[in-house]
Image 1 (cartoon, rainbow, N blue to C red):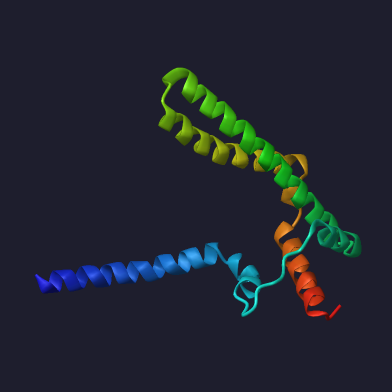
Image 2: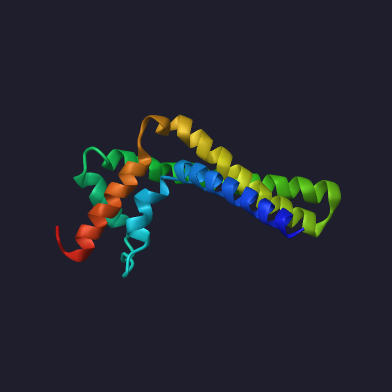
Length: 149
């Protein structure tokens, strides 16, 4: 009986290592942000004027960051539309408060997703490297916050 438990643990351990490598490869994007997130002292907050200053100062990554910031507006509008319409339908047809609340949350998530997809095509974000622009902004902000620029 004990050997069965040991073999199942080793079976899971072997497969866990494979899955861990698989997902580590898929989420390698997190490595780009880890040096900004795992700091001893967090980066100070920035304002819209700081972001606008970066956009004006960087001719390569500035327009990409601006487009990525505009895409958030699409997501927010989609979030509101999705939440209100799904909650409205749920309330109209079921008169269930908990169903309306759950559909409100689900509609917000679905609406945000659809809004981001619309922004992706409308603003042609699929052609841009938005993550690189965000990392460049973080590097710029880190230098500015530390007084190196």
